[in-house]
Image (cartoon, rainbow, N blue to C red; front, side, top):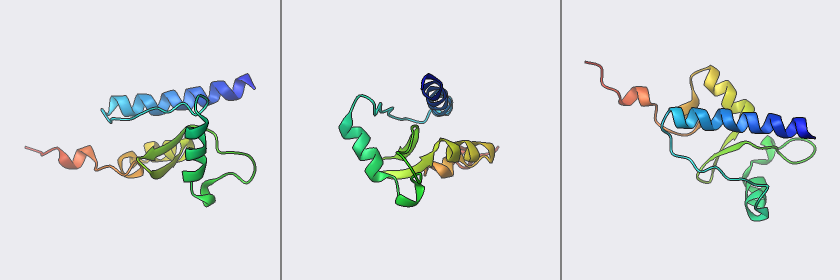
Length: 99
């Protein structure tokens, strides 16, 4: 069981590092400390995004109440340079004016 926890922690740190590096404001919610937050997360993940068995594992990423996706979706968007779109944010590149 410890290995699963370590994998989850590494994935969470990967998401947090990306958000911090890109100066994206976020709130990290520890669902192990709050039954209310855990239930909110489970309730707000679209049924088609939930695993066939068991509960979805963190990290699950939301922009407010809008579900963005899980870590695998985040990682895929990072690899294809579409994270801002994945997060429902305007790309920083679009706002930088070229001289």
